[in-house]
Image (tube, rainbow, N blue to C red; front, side):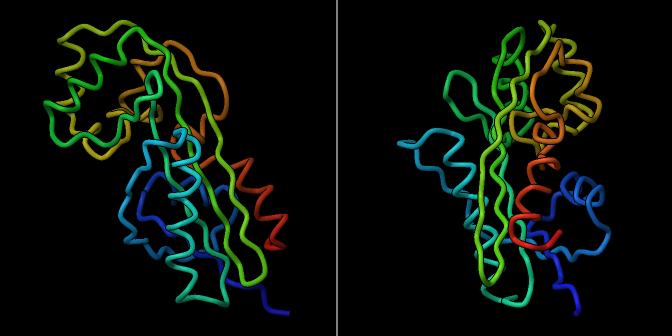
Length: 189
């Protein structure tokens, strides 16, 4: 029996690298679903629903495949901090996160012909207190520009992290252990 193909509905290089920890046999087909938030829902629910929308968007064109969707949201006191619009917005977000604990929620979804399974995973991150110079220098690296919350725990931004709890791969954007469980439940693994 030929194993069905796996598709990652994301063009995130971070998710691509993380998925390689499970399998090297997958195709990338980015979802073009607009990331609209429902502010009446908790951030975890928004992340889960966005991941599901992305996976279902691609799955309709690839019914013979398993499709993985994911979406990561950074929240500070239930306010969602998305990707920054520009360098000034990134600096504003990092000043708000400085010295505080925030949450990172990633929704993941696996869609196959017979099953759709999704879940939201939450981790906590505490930033050290940052100086204006540290924030400016970090933003000038360009790293924060396409990241929720304006930072990357796995990159240059790691210097800002005082501590975290929960899944580090969740904070990066694809909680590997939880994804393995969903893939096992759908029959891929």
